[in-house]
Length: 95
Image (cartoon, rainbow, N blue to C red):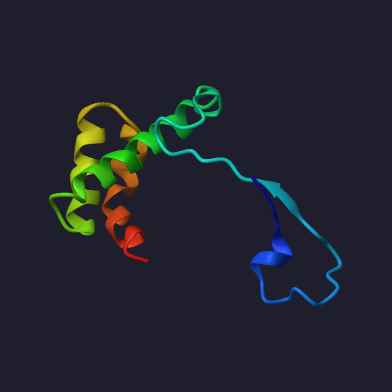
């Protein structure tokens, strides 16, 4: 999917000095594997988000994130990043 930045902003009728066109890819786990295959980190992030979403069926969003962080650290998925920043994840998810 291609998205024009001006369509996402309230400046649709104004002339902008720069227009940005971006290609948007679905990186949900199981989608676009050819893209996820190129980046171990992106693939791991996609899996982390899948774990959060899977947990939401049983827990609150905050608990889902905490459980996903714990699972991923225990299974060496984004381990170093989550050990350093994992405590911040529930706060970011709730924004």
